[in-house]
Amino acid sequence: MSSVKFRTLAIGLTSLLAGAVAVAGSATAAAADAETAYPTPLAAETIPNVRTLPAIYPNTWAFLNFSSDRIELRNVGGDAREIEGQLQARDSAMLLIASTRPELYVADTVWSRFTRGVRTDYITVYDTKTLTPIGEIVLPTKRGLITAMEGMFAFTDHERMALVFNFTPASSVTVVDLVKRKVLGEVEIPGCSLVYPTVARGFSTLCASGTLLTVLLGEDGKVTARSESKAFNVIDTDPLFTWSAQLGPVRYFPTMLGHVQPIETEGDAVTVLPQWSLLSADDAAAHWRPSGWQPIAGDGADSLFVLMQSDAREGSYKDPGSEVWVFDAKTKTRTKRLRLARPGSSIALTHSAEPLLLVQGGERLDVYDSQTGSLLRSLNMTGFRTRMTIQPVPGE
Amino acid sequence: MVKVDRFAERVLRAFAGRTSRRSVFTLLGSALLGAATVPLLPVARGEDVEPNPGDPNSGMQPPQTSGNPQDPGDQTRCDYWRYCAIDGSLCTCYGGTVSSCPPGTEMSPITWIGTCFNPADKRNYIISYNDCCGGVLWGRCNCQRNEGDRPVVRPSSNNEVTWCFGTQSQSYTCSTAVILGVATDTK
Image (cartoon, rainbow over all chains, first blue to last red; front, side, top):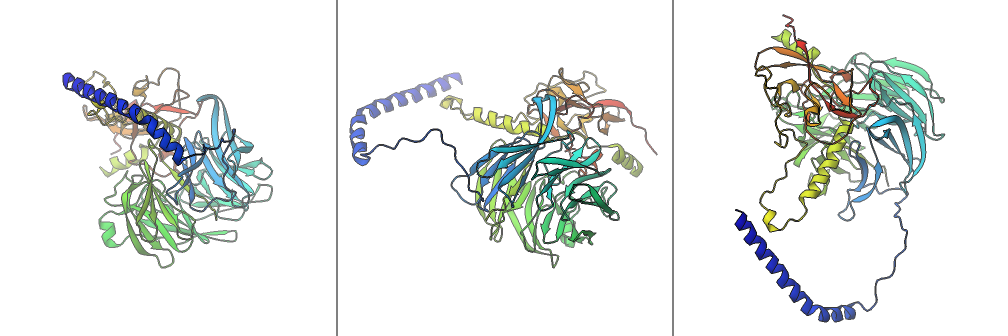
């Protein structure tokens, strides 16, 4: 075996040497040809030089949160430059993208000696155009260290405030004034998890008792009212995924066994509406169920896109799905069934007029036409092994 | 049997925060992939597929066994009986053992437990999946099972949460699987 390898090596080196001689022989002629073709040399370039981004990003860009490794800004709408920039992220980092001012916010946790030393929880304020940090808000060291997911960090009060979910393992929410860049206070939410910006100033949170707790806040960030729904989340057998898609005043959560749970906001009132099924009898018999990490997206109109898996079983609800089913939320019917080129774990829709369906599956981010389901392009994310949160930019 | 299942359901699963730990796999995967693409002349082609060190079943780890036939299996592999409800990096791949943290880390006293069936003595054991915290982060021997896992709305049944509480650092390193005792049949 080793003698075969040696012969192969010898042949390879001989070929390389022969090639080198041939190149040297033709070098003079080639230089003369090049000077004729390009009589003027390339212009000298400026140093230093840092690229800037548009103040308002194209709506075919999306942030990809690599779950505490980095957050990348990618152009998913074209085949030219894919990566536009990246933001630092260390542990359970979550991003908020402002649409009312040119700022981005990343809530993160670090230790002074990498994995030990003094813990700091903080929000970094980034300038949208330069991606440089322009401010920082230090938080109580209570952030929930959980795989990055919806509900850990949310805007409220028209982006004036941010809400940070804490888990110590007692649950609470840190209320932050993003404009004044200071912490306003803390709201205890015993037995409840995550924050959803259902009301204008305040939030709803999912409780282990199966209820939804809604908390209203005053301008100072203090609690003004609390209301709790009846229990509806059957956590033992058919729990809500903690991911949702919002269409108008209604937020839709898929459930493990294939229902969808609408939750409607009207002013400061949050109502748990009746669930409806995503499945026909045949679908149920084939054990089709929602699955994946980020399994639902809304198109801003009436359509819900849900990542689905057949032959689902206990323990498979975070596994990749093979199809995306599209539902009309008004008629509660399935309108399309998109077969994916490869199984996907996280899905999202861009905010463009013709939304692109983004599907992260393993080390690829596949971009589909959300209407036809045709695969437009596939972006490479070599080495990606974690769970991804996809956040398309509001953009224009 | 239903009662046993219910008991198992009640005491089982969840555990551990995979966020920070998972990030390591991304970095490590990239590094290794980079290494794999270094041109090595034609002679190196052939042994192509680079094993993924994040996969505990890749065969990259030398096996670790207890030497006791009553505690069978390779403790560096995901299919070892005590790991039935684990989700994280196995401490056996980091210088620890199945029941001890690697040197330089701290064991979290707050944890999640599971009930696992020992195929040798046919008993169910209560297993405590204590996380080890504050050590070196890198991606090796990731073992993830979601059976019985529930969304984070019930944190004690959720394996996305980092269970490094009561330790000096809350930065995750790896997970152990410690025998607490024999599970009592509630029948």
